[in-house]
Length: 615
Image 1: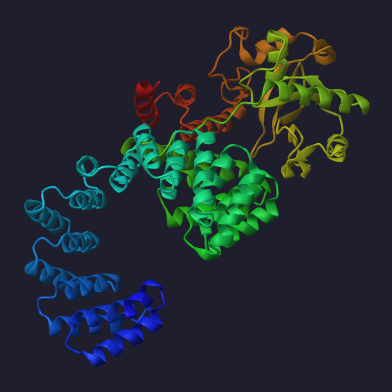
Image 2: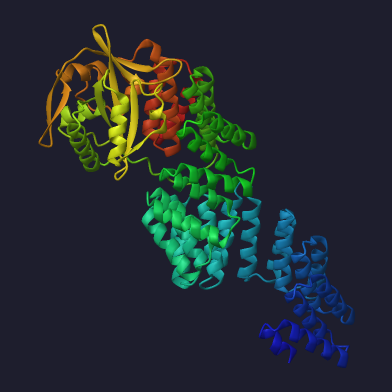
């Protein structure tokens, strides 16, 4: 009757029945073992251990009593006592595989890997066809993770799978090791095999999604995570993983919903709070993003990624002191976090602290290079997408209509002019639209018109009059296309154009020009009356030949001499960004552009040597 109640999960009732059985017949050790199991289920672990001991006192050869006591001590993390009990089991029955498996697990937890392997070898001498022992051997090698251990783990899992038909655990764990080694195609193949054997294996779907994500196969990753959630709809980690992929697919509202679900099922899930902040940042809900990062940090005060993410929002809001404090805190927690140094350098650059900014960028690049050299890539990264030409074209036409309606004169400049004049279309690799205006045009009037149209997000820095003399930027909300507005300042026979910066602006010097007309998509736009002279000024006489490495901020032929120290900072900043994106060709190009400023630079030489085989 006690066993029936136990199997019905009615543990208090089973407990009383087992006690009655013992009262009627106190000499039967199996009654005590059953009683101990009921006590375990009720969370009375120390009482259960005492009862297992009573069973062993009644029958000193009771393998069941010693094994139960050992497993209970393992739960209680009393590992020495657990090992003692497992050894007693093996002494009495050297074919008791459960004792070997449990013993090796405890030895592995205690980092006694050599003893764990010796225990498995001894067991395999007696049980050579045990797939479970080989599975545990794989666990030990995987946990030890020394040189070559992961390959040994793969062999152990493979041998286990060969011994036991449809052995899902072995193939699943082998796939996990392939993931650790960045051998994602093999991992995908194994997870798919596990799912073929068992379509209810939710962890296989989850990990398959991760493998797809690490290959940047986002659609397949999303589908796998969704399949996992159909099986286990209450799993916060899977919701969080789904949110990450949706975020990187620019499906921000869906990502936000996924993170909310993750937090619902795990209210202390600090990573989900931080990731939710990333989504809110992309949605330009900056105050809500700051709050979400704050919740992440409140849950885990040493969460350096959240400090860096929050610092980005502070930087966007021009709250530089708070941004710097967050980056400093991240570096204090993790001195090897390259992104924190790069972001800190951007704060210094914004403040005009050029030499400290350069050193911080160089530190970021050096740390990133060390990471790339010392460990396999965690995943493939999809490079930042250039703007979609059709979307950008529509944004430019809409802007033309809006500014024409308000009688605001403007002309096409920089890369936008280059694309329209040379190719009759916008550049497919460009990242923004560039338009020019007369120096004396009132900035506030233009900002007001853009703001009241409701179609543009205005960079908060643009509302600071000291920042928008030469330039300000907006983002068209619906399509996410950036637009830079440049004001051209007369300077003798020349015009100056560029960006606000401290301690001095970053400027290009153009030959003076009048405005002429240029046709695009059936519309008449204004442009420099001699477009070829304008383009030659900045891009050089070879402007008709596309140069994938050209960056006007770094390579512009008409940069003023005073602008070059700032230009060097932008070169380092963009080099770091392309290393993060794993865009090796672009990074390589920036190394050579930096060499025009710093001909002798050991860091660039080392980086070029690293990148050359990759491209």
